[in-house]
Image 1 (cartoon, rainbow, N blue to C red):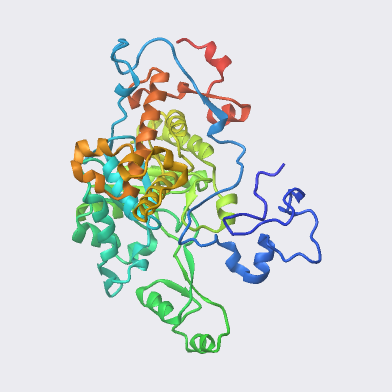
Image 2: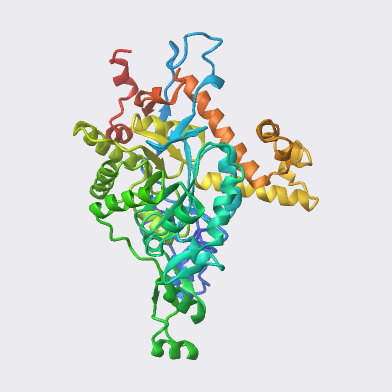
Length: 514
């Protein structure tokens, strides 16, 4: 059997002619007929060339791997205990799931409280207003994605440095207008953003307190890339300092463009050329500028590189390192990169655990760690926290959170247009009837909560569901604070799961003292 998906997918808007007879090794139909019009990925490539590498309509969709990895969190089961209560008195009236404390903090020396151990990772598209606003309602940190300035039609620069970015300001305000002192909005900067002084602008002009430096480019690791249709736009990006190929300032290229010949323009993000000592200095600079929290974001790279990143984070006293496993969501990565690159989340977390133990054994600071990469529901969150205990104390919820914000927004729009989505009509026909958590928001924000953006309410309700589910699973293990969650709270179901993570099987656990 093949773990890789076939060459027909909604990600590329393609399909196989005969999905029941496929050659696993290639992912193609077992029989290619002479009269096939080629709806598969090979056929698309025959018409669109290198364009077929990329997902379909990336501006309107979000994506994740379709690969069936040989190890994921379904290969573990959650343990359960009968005796005792860790974190609360052994009192049946007190040790109950609503009293499980899932509150946490974000940051080290200048920390802010959070209502749950979640962070919403970098996004800057789709229902982004609702995504940022919903994070504030939920009291968790949220990250503005990279390269926002390239999308800002009102961007002002002096030289190549940002002087004003109304779009970034609007994104920051989407969080702040609902902020009640929990979590924070974090601005991510990639290598190009650093060249443009995006973080300096945000900290100095917008008062942004939390920033995140990204390793890699675009979604997880590959270079950001995108076709530029008009030479005028290509020239604008070139003038800003972006890498644009072919060079639109070359007279020969401009002449060829006018004749409709030659390759299309492409804006390509620069691959970071960081060095550890430069990163340490950069972190110190950002703190001197006024950043209260400086974070790292990285993908599932070679374990040796991950070790350098975590060692650098230790030296720089980074506030949070988010590690994003293969298989989770991406913005617009090439489909093959999503499916065939990087360590899947469970394997990545096992590697991170080993690096963290080495740091601790050496007497070095172990940075706070968040895991990302396909987390969507409370069982996955609990397993992620348990597998990484005590070093992983935060879980990133990306695609699922954005999906909740998008659904909430779409339902709200349907109600405004006098339509009740048929799948939800059983709950009622008004915003307050459909969105059951509005009374909870009213208790904190007052009656105006009923008029909040429905996408933000949808994200709040989704995170409420995951929070309550997490509390229930904690009570199942008699663990009533986050710090009491341990690796013994999950059991591997396969030999590979046990071998890669070092977790004891049920039989091995039987021989250990309680």
